[in-house]
Length: 541
Image (cartoon, rainbow, N blue to C red; front, side, top):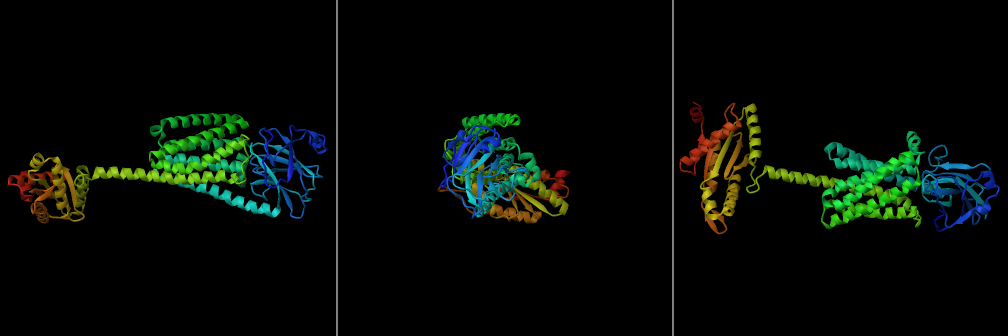
């Protein structure tokens, strides 16, 4: 494929030789007539076999500003460069023996110490391992260094962001056991390794450079893994199996293709795998975008974060795949937009997942609150107050501190329900609960034991004091009628009180308080009865 990009200032006429003759023949001009000119100023090969390219200066390039031949976005490509008058090439690559640590990984740089005369040619023998256009230009040395600094800053920002997000995802995964963070961790790590392996940053770590730098299959494997992990994470994050099963099946099919491509990558580095992988990435991105739009329409909170994350990624993926297919050439900033899109997308998804986990916790806390507190009265539920009573009884025994309980119910409550309906009965119970709870201390416990039965637990309270509290509760209800929907309903309480004795269980304490409650009913209701030690002894004997 003969394709080249158009740049604002075209320094060279670019031509390509379809073949790999001996260098001595090419340099002698024996094949000059076979070079086919291409438009623009970029080198793009889809075959991994070495090919010759010729760069012919359109105008003189003076040596005053220390001109440098720059081949941008080389990734894993290697090049041999024959400068004018030289019979030995300069070899360049991002990783390995041909790497030049004096420059960043944004480009392969070769000095032109003598400059170039008009119509003078430079010959390149290209070994393209990454089917990505390499823009060719000439830059003064000072511009090369300035752009290198910018490149290093941006790449450090991107890779550093992915690393920090991966550490956070790992910490959340280990700390709270939320498996969605494991999917996110795998996605972030795979993305970072993909960018570092194809972008050349692995050369900073010798053993990584030796393991990952010379084989294009390694970076490709990380890229495929990143898409696979991202699809899996997003299916889980948006709960597609339940909410959007059709789109889930599309992503499931994409994952099967990705797995097949990963297996194929083990055996071959064919460029078709990269092309198919990018098409699958495009399909996955579009599918996720559609899923986000649908979820947003349905007011799914997670979809808002997905839409914010994937809208720019869809555009970038389309631009990327279009360039690989030869439909167009992207501007220089696309070299940074794609990895920055990874980092920003990871950041947004991390925030979104954190919000998702917080929402799950809020839902769990709400469910726990419903299980702990009675919806009608605001009192503790029976299981909740029984659990807390058990703990207080144990603490009272260990600390040899007093503890008392008050058991009461509403007199003739069934009659209120029968005559006025359950709705009025519920409102009556709510008012009674409010009046009585307001007479208690902040550390006293107030629980609905069942129906209209209420249990009050009074820590650090002896029987005499508890009898006084119970009397206050009785008076708070019968002091004035209940005003409900224009009706005045008289109400009163029957109350039983008991104090904990040494070695006594919580169950036995409640039995004695219940016995005292029935004593109040037998005495005519609207009164307080205490279960004393003497009565306990009488009951035991």
